[in-house]
Image 1 (cartoon, rainbow, N blue to C red):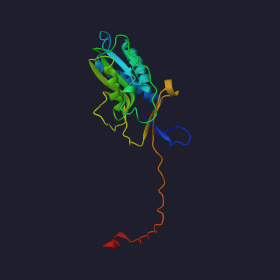
Image 2 (image 1 turned 90 degrees about the vertical axis):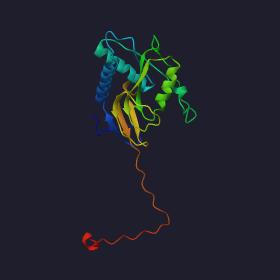
Image 3 (image 1 turned 120 degrees about the horizontal axis):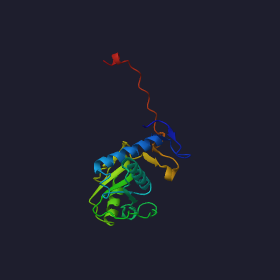
Image 4 (image 1 turned 60 degrees about the horizontal axis):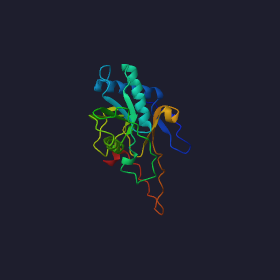
Length: 220
């Protein structure tokens, strides 16, 4: 459950409000794992069909955690790996160069399998589209689903997650910060809002005289 504790996001940065605590993240992952089990009918007797592929960096961490939770709940370990979509992004020429991460497709591949792509935050949908393009170079899955920890809206492509940990309405100026122990030494989800800029006085503008205070009854 979200609370109002503030996150230490760095000196000089605006304060961030906590949306999910460490315990919330654990519960959310467990819930998504149960939903995947229910929707895919994964378990003893149906183990060869499901593949979890995380989108690095934190999506890959989440995929491994989901696989561990599914194993705990069913007694059967699903196939898990990662898919790097960096070279398939449509914004490669914008901003600094991105580091490449090795794609790790589980033994047995993805042909004819039900693949669940896993990411930490879903926004425009462009990362997911890039992952789908990367996936097509690795094989031909029977179906592809999407699981995300946070859906913050602002879609630019017709992409919808099948499993959502938390829907968070945001403005484009806000940032969602996902923290996971494996990469950040702690678990949590924060929302960072930009600091309001003070209004600048209009140079050379004459001050407008204040309107006399008139009681409502005197206005007629």
